[in-house]
Image 1 (cartoon, rainbow, N blue to C red):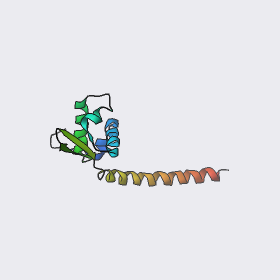
Image 2: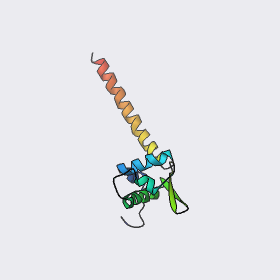
Image 3: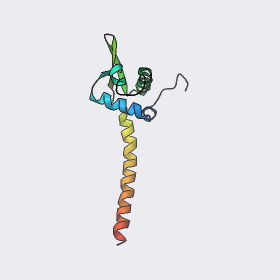
Length: 106
């Protein structure tokens, strides 16, 4: 990936570890050490995940003393929710059709 390319929301949430990081940050602001304690990977690996989440603008960090605290920035998830809602309507419609077919076969 070129240095100028940034990760988008879809790329960022594709990884299960990053989804779990987002879940942790939805509870409260946390330092990287606290985030890393929840995973069987190195602190460096978590830092890379946080970098990708930051590029997608899903998290932000702020310095507090010697630590950097990360927090969830949920606004970019709205794009994802809008995309999913289209498919939710699609599946809801398909399930309604299936229900109608099944009920009328009797």
